[in-house]
Structures are given as structure tokens and as C-alpha cells.
Image (cartoon, rainbow, N blue to C red; front, top):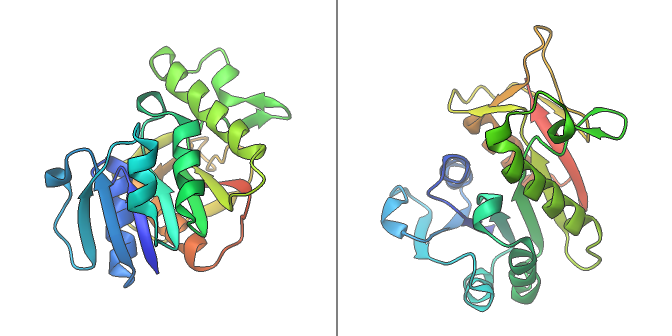
Length: 203
């Protein structure tokens, strides 16, 4: 497939581009500074601005899939969704956040007393992005939330999938590596199972 990765120089985006390229997909890796994108087979780097809706739509046009892997506070969900719709891509996937996941029925992680203050604004905007997608009628979207700890690690290919509830391991820890998150996202692209839905991945 032809797949565009917006934010391909970031922690998650770079692993996603690498995973997809390694599976033989043709990847357009988009970043404000394309020089920061790793040189890999099947990957073409392009300069793109997430706040330029028309410009982004032009880059996305002709792709089967577009992936958004950008900080929520550094972008505008309406512009990203608008660019994806205007481009005519078949699917639009978003690297989500854990803050919008539920820790109890109707209780999002971001609203709990011990949620780290420094991540609250980013998490709240991520939750707003998910809510906006939920009302989207035309776009075939998917929002993949990581676990609470989203960190560099290994590509094990061994993880669990969930829907709207935060996943925790037997030791109470909620985590996923960037590498295994990329595997879960690539699997979803190749074998769609969560169209117009959010899902989550964790150990």
C-alpha cells in the first residue's frame, strides 16, 4: 500500500514508518524538517506543515492510508481531519493518547487525581480529538491509544489489544513500547478490525 505518515520524525512516527517500510509498503514520511527522517528503503521524506490543511491534503492525495502521529497541542484536529477528507485517502489512523482511556465505566484516566499535571493539557486535547472523530461520518478513521507508559523499547510482537479500557499487566503496570505499538498499528492497516473505532494496545 501507499501510506503517508504525518510526524514521521517523532518517537512513534519514526517506528511506524520503519515497521511499514519493512513490510514492503511504500511510505511517504512527512515532517516539518524532513532531514530528521531516517533514510530507509521504501521511505520517501517530504516536508509538510500540520497547520497547513490544503498543503497537507495535497501531499496525502493518492495514498491508500494516512497516519497522524503528532503532538495534540502542536496541531489542530479539525485541520488534520479536514486534510485527510480532502485528500480522499481510504483510511485515516491516529496515534492517540492513553488519557482518554477508561479506568472505570465512564471515568477517563486524564480525570483521575494522580494523572501527571505536565501531561494533562496534551491528554485533554487528545480526548477532544477522539470525540471529534466520533462524530465523523465520512472518514474511515481508527484511533489507537497506547498504554499509560509509552516508551522506547523492543519489538517483541507480543502484546494485548483492548477497546476503551486502560490495559494493565499482572504487576499493575500499563505500558507499551513505541516498537510494538508500530506493530499493532501496521497489523490494523493490513487486517482492518477497528474501522470508526478506538482501540488500545499494551502488555
